[in-house]
Amino acid sequence: MSLEYKSTPIGALPNEWKVLQLDEIGEFKNGINKGKEDFGHGFPMVNLNDVFGVSTIYNTNLGLVNSTINERESYSLIKGDVLFIRSSVKPSGVGLTATISCDMRDTVYSGFIIRFRDNGVLDLGYKRHCFYEKGFRDRLLAKSTVSANTNINQNALNTLLLAVPPLQEQQKIAEILSTVDAKIDIIDQQITQTQELKKGLMQRLLTKGIGHTEFKDSPLGKIPKSWEVVKQSEVATFFNGRAYKLTEWEKEGIPVIRLQNLTGTGKTYYYSNLKLPDHQYCHNGDLLYMWSATFGPVKWFGDKAIYHYHIWKIEHDLNRLDSGFHYYLLDDVTARMKNESHGSTMLHVTKGGMEKLLIKLPSLKEQQKIADILSSVDEKLEVLLEKKVHYQVLKQGLMQQLLTGKIRVKV
Image (cartoon, rainbow, N blue to C red; front, top):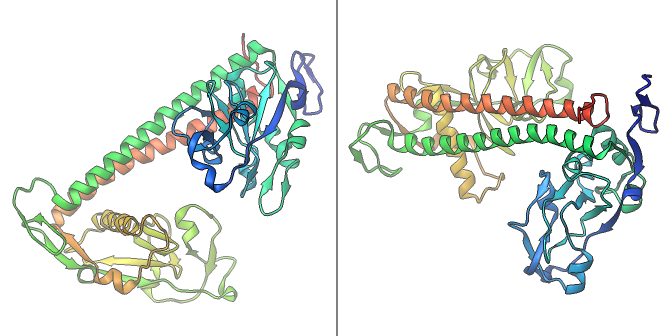
């Protein structure tokens, strides 16, 4: 070990750094519990949903709760307080933190949250990052308990060890990490703006087309005079996927695409060597539709595969319907169906219903132009999402190096 580092209970750290239990540098306090009748009126309250997914909490858009003067004093929130999530369905959610950005007058916090108020040893910016360091998270999860949810309590939090650099070094570390956060925030704004642009373009292009001045009435409302209204079955064929028995899965062969492979929630593939009709296979570029639990069209970009029961493959009359245009049309149709069911994912979508569904049909040339425009927006979104992932990975690497002292900052 280098002479600049020392051995500690949480690993090698710079000589100037301290390892402190959280109860040595601050106090924890559970939040307030209220009955249903107390919500919706009174004074602001930070709830569980206000903490998930954010690093800093501002005194805006908070729900209300009926609280007394004594409660508002006892469960107060001041600049620099750190709120820990006490309980989470998923282990990854327990103990996540958010920092209070300013004194929040007359505001209390929920019983699902534990407040940590330190004694000035930690820099405000440093507190936004240090509780996300992998070693600290591992120690926290090791002290959590699991029942229906994963939980952490005050006693466990009090005993957690934290690496504490000198204050000026904390500030420099926080400055570096906050710079990356700012870049991620900018990319998030660009993603939101591009998504709104796409939404507006789809609304216009799929109803009014490109450059039309004459319109006519149709079963689907006003449409350009040159457009048709047809049933999907007139221009596309929907093929059912195949259900498999457990005994039919193989360790190798042709991969079987399931919903989780299309949504990114699972990467495990099963395989089959059954001889199937040609329409049971999909190939690179084919259009698929997820119709159970998860809904919507997806383009398959991969090798030859078999699609599972909860997926339809769509083949097109290429003289009348462009596959790229149909992808966006189905995306719009699915969004409208979800909107009409008030956002529920429990839609009732049948193959017969989809085949009978009326759609607006521009000329093939206009379909391809519309698809090209929307595809270019999707490509921009893809670039932005890749940039965001890049900076998130960069931040994780920096956190692991800076918050453990493996890389030192110049103060």
